[in-house]
Length: 173
Ligand SMILES: *[C@@H]1O[C@H](CO)[C@@H](O)[C@H](O)[C@H]1NC(C)=O
Ligand SMILES: *[C@@H]1O[C@H](CO)[C@@H](O)[C@H](O)[C@H]1NC(C)=O
Ligand SMILES: *[C@@H]1O[C@H](CO)[C@@H](O)[C@H](O)[C@H]1NC(C)=O
Image (cartoon, rainbow, N blue to C red; front, side, top):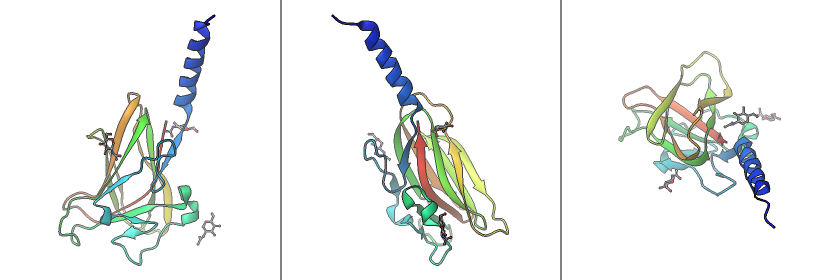
């Protein structure tokens, strides 16, 4: 004999559980649930566990990073022949995403974030006299319709100042 209400209760329970689970997409290891990784474009504008375009720069302490990895990029309009901002894109299936990155306190950052092709927010950091790095949540998508979404992070703006982005992870639920 079937027990329809039980199936319904189980389904609702599973949904409630799923929506309360936070999944971390590491900047290099990707999404543990489906193996999807960030797509870095152009790939040679980003470096693993280092900051592309910034040889000799100080770096965040790797052992504090999610999965002990980060991916860095320095956008410098003067240095690049093709001054379009480097991007990092990632897909997730859920209803909210947060982006964790490192801020270099004495360096500038100018990031923009789009969800499904629409500009959602920006984050600017103005260099302070202080040294060192700070781990920060720089983007919160707020509540989205549940489903598949694409987050794109852009480093810098055309003709803008130098911009440093050091990605650590995206957490979605
Ligand atoms: C990096 O962080 C770890 C854990 O917090 C700490 O033990 C270590 O001393 C740090 N290394 C440096 C070079 O600051
Ligand atoms: C996201 O998914 C779409 C459709 O499957 C795919 O075309 C695109 O390359 C994916 N993007 C990333 C960053 O994985
Ligand atoms: C993850 O969990 C925390 C509570 O631990 C919650 O505040 C947050 O909204 C959750 N979702 C994301 C996407 O981080």
